Amino acid sequence: MKWIIDTDPGIDDASAIITAVNSGALDILGITSVHGNVGLNHTTRNALKLVELMGGDVPVYQGTSRPILQQREHAAEYHGENGFGNTSLPEPGIAPQDQYAVDFIIESTKKQEVSLLTLGPLTNVALAIAKERELEKRIKQIVMMAGTSRARGNTSPLAEFNIFADPEAAAVVFESGIPIIMVPWETCLDTVFGSEVIVRIRRSSTEVGKAFAQAMEYSVGRTKAYLGSEVLLLCDLLAACAAIDPTVITQQLNAKVTVETGGRFSRGLTVIDERMDDGSKPNASIALACDRAKIENMFLDAINAK
Ligand code: RIB
Ligand code: CA
Image (tube, rainbow, N blue to C red; front, side, top):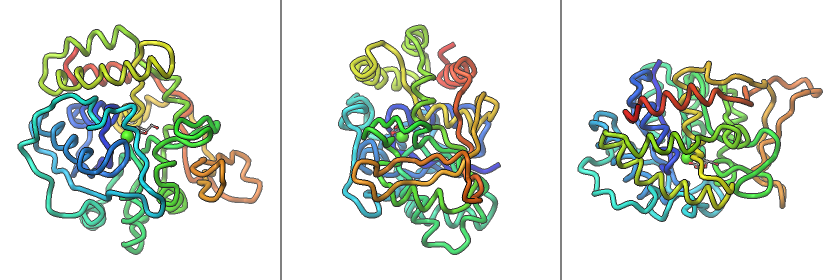
């Protein structure tokens, strides 16, 4: 199966990209960068740096720099101003492809069926759906880190960042009919990684593992301030591992998910309708629980931190 990874690296995005690329389990056509945790220049640069540190043979395509309608949001407080823990990574020696990420997504699906692993705001995907007639029939599935299962937000009281950063784009994607596997914020909170993993990452011997270990320190510090304990919260890693091996999802719920775009207090909420009394059909499978040990091993293998 062919994959495109759409991402706003981002420290947890980095763990996902490292695992997706180094696992060798996904046939990755390319990585598309998008605005999100930090600005597009940084997310693109971080994607390039990660690819270069892993051998550099996955092309990176630069995507959209802003949401469809609202002003940009960012999460620099959790990822550092440069999106990689403010670590002083050298400039990447490789450049993004010339083709715009939205067009790359469209053109890739003309040659073969493609699955998407989305780790950031859904602007690139929504624009591709809007631009290309019937694109939604050529995308096999979207595995995404996005949304909430019980309305426990992280960026607003009710909304998770990847939805909140572009609710209109998220609404387009959830209404498209493309099969979705959604890893929500609450499941990420229930699947954090403890100090023994942190210690093993610090011992990583690969270039990309050492770079991640530097950036990780920032994330551990910020998560300690947020959760009160020294753990690693790697949301996007769960989605990447679910794409590699769906059995990492140990409990799931099929439901109709819609995105609130109008509410004054609820904008960016993913509304989970389990009953579907109106006769609507499920459009997403929500990962309510994941196998932490399996994910931990997949990541530690990927950064050679065994
Ligand atoms: O809410 C967590 C999500 O927002 C993750 O994808 C993180 O990287 C940020 O983009
Ligand atoms: Ca992300």
